[in-house]
Length: 187
Image (cartoon, rainbow, N blue to C red; front, top):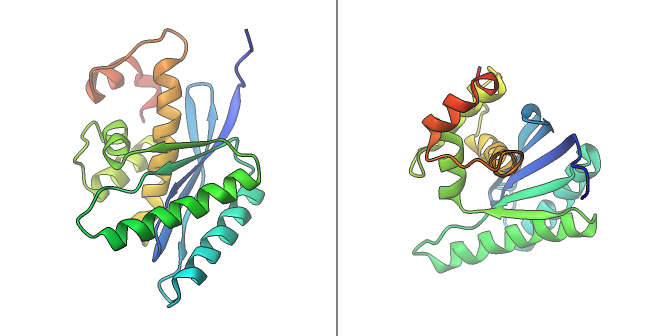
């Protein structure tokens, strides 16, 4: 049996064609800490293909800077506007291509799953997710755009999936039972 790596860097991306959010965390055993979060703006670009090029280039730059062990992405949500879904799917695909070009494994999570794992509520708002992340990772600054905390939430969600299945193999029925068993991880 292979020994589990003690540390790993997880990058989370919330793809978008106007603003892409990202977050990078360091996972040490069952503890996580914030390395970086931010946004990549593309709302000033008119051409959709230039936006995709910027997503690719910025994702490559982030990967080269932070050297993540894995990339977690928010899956495009189902919406009524097919054109918006297509554009978001392309943005996600470009971020995936950037990670694959650097041999970084990719994981994908539905928006509802991300919100559920951060707040315990799959219908939570962006503000609730950001507030919970501030508590979990002990940072004070509120990002100008909640897309940054959305990207961070994807990374934390991925970390929680490993934590929930590792070691004892314990599963939790909700946020309250997780908090009860993991008091040291909550500040």
